[in-house]
Amino acid sequence: MIKKNELVYICSPLSAPTEQQIRENMKKASDYAELVVRQFHCRAIAPHSFLPAYLDDRIPEERELCLAFGISVLKLCRAVLVCGNRISSGMEGEIKTALECNIPVYSLWERPDGIALIRTEERRRTDEMQICQENILQQG
Image 1 (cartoon, one colour):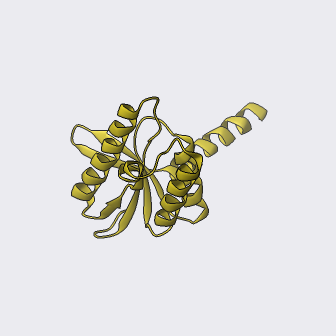
Image 2 (cartoon, rainbow, N blue to C red):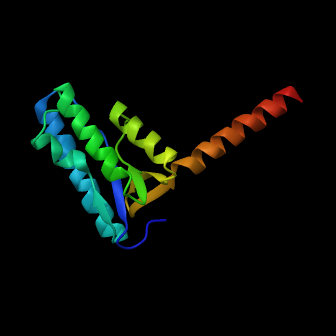
Image 3 (tube, helix red, strand yellow):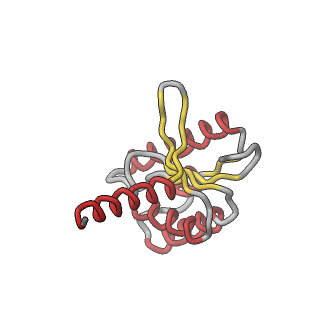
């Protein structure tokens, strides 16, 4: 799990139809980082909480620069925390990179009594095992 002072990466949606919604998503990313820091006493970073204030996500070259910066930071982290209710294309790339680099990926679940983390790889393995078992039972 996450240890005190470890650097963790906040992965959450940024893209949205309007500038206001993008700003709201930036704020959510910042809020997720603060929540994680309070809960786990780690260092959480969400580059998309501040980079769009300087670089325009709608300009392809600037978007690529932001994504490259985010991936560089992600590679320094001990874990990736997936937050929010959807996976954007940028998030897909971050998750894929984390898994390729053997960085644990967790889904953050907000609950009334706090937050919980579910390791994404473990959930995938469970799903794969269930599918495999179902196939065996159907074939048998």
